[in-house]
Image (cartoon, rainbow, N blue to C red):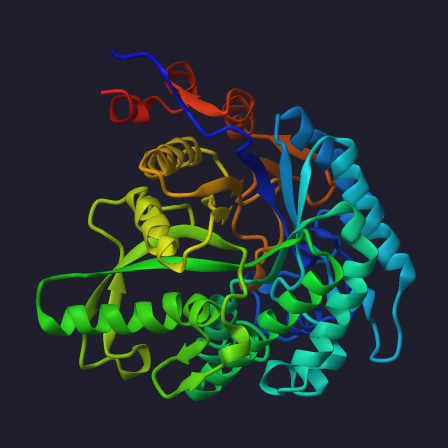
Length: 440
């Protein structure tokens, strides 16, 4: 059997990603806290509660674990509702806590990446109409100005909005995120507001910090026609256009193009310094005249693909190649801002991790500009409408005691980060099922 190591590029960013509401705990002033109080909104009636207790300071021990695992970067989000708890009030203590987190990363020789919106906003914003109200563009810009002014000495990598496509679809088509609506035209309006809000934030950040690098994190989901039939190809193209393409295309060209609307937005053109790519899985897609609510389509996973514990993610590492090749069209460097699998027993994750990273290495080796990889996630956390039923962490969490439980994947990822590559010895030790695929 061949032996060797697939090395990544010099100065490659290796880290994990987290988000504020999912790890901080005790946040009772945002849209998700209110959503969690409604019956039937979260699987098994779960609530975020204490989460991972970061707001009380447990981020320190988790950052220590990340540092001990040879990670040189971390992506975290900050919570608008903490920084601006009311329209006329800023909380300087909250900014001090976030400043302390970023200093903590810098002290650990880790590069911070800060996300400014990760699915949640203050409840007072929702009461004003939230993302359906055009006023949110300037409200968000004011929050960004306040946050960046306070934190820019410690951060140069900014993600304005996490997964705007997932947010718009989940909140306004599928109805599983607040405000729980099912209206495609409203989803398109919200996505347009998200595009314009990103562009406004981009200009605010660069006004304050010339050296900043600003992007958004888009969830790429491959939609593969199930057959060569025209119906399958058409519905796959429609899904990809509105879910994958619309947001980053508008940031590149200044044209917002979805099913019911095509609009020139010149102020949004050329407003990304990098593209954040979140990739988890892909779908086969087939035309179905009996599914008008899903754009006349039926989606399913590729035959024979290994599935995550919840059955919501299929292990398709080739989709990582497709994601990067797709992202390359937007003409900016890319960073994998999320990738991972829910796996409480840590059975699939080692294979998922090494095979996806090998796919990423292959496409980088073909000169596609990818600068880093952030694994989702560092420690099990509150997974939105699925509550605590999914386990994405390299470390498990005992919610009763807040103890962290080390999974073998934590050591696997540490070896990869330390080496800046994937060695045959590491694959043989942690993911032997992948050995013959990576080192044939």
